Amino acid sequence: MSDISIVIASHSGYGHTAQLATAVADGAHSVAGTQVHRVDVAALSDADWDLMDAADGIIFGTPTYMGTASGAFHTFAEATSKRWMSRAWSDKLAAGFTNSGSMSGDKLHTLQYLSLLAAQHGMLWVSLNLLPGWNTTTSGPEDDNRLGFYLGAGAQSFNDTPDVHDADLSTARHLGRRVAEQTRIHRAGLAAATRAH
View: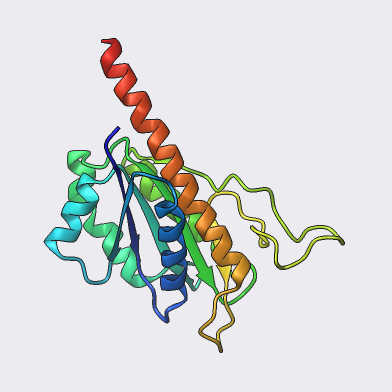
């Protein structure tokens, strides 16, 4: 089977979400035969749009500001309307990740927004598929999915440091790997269905 292509389309205001995007890319790269591209949705070129159009999957990433995706990401989402009208992204796989300074920080709303954007495009959403961590007296903040999200990867980074928590980076790597694995399965299924006809 030929390589699959995953694009990470993200915006980072202060560098935290960019660190998550790197971790997501590392996770996707860990699956053999996966090409990974990153695009900054705040500065898209025609070549970046072409990468997304040709990709098998797109992983959306944005900080959570004031309870939703960043303004730059919203501008990008509105600019996808041409793809929406032509159904250019229909049946691609999609997933999402976000970061905020607070443990909750209304990140769930942002992940719901990202999944709704994907649904409007007819994309197939890939969930995190990790049980929540740090929810018993014997677990701790080093657990993957320590913040307990299911829809995508949620991360927390303090506003006064450039660092993202190691467990959240590990969770982001898991998301990237899972999307690449599911994309390969999806591609194989499509190929088998084509051969059957």
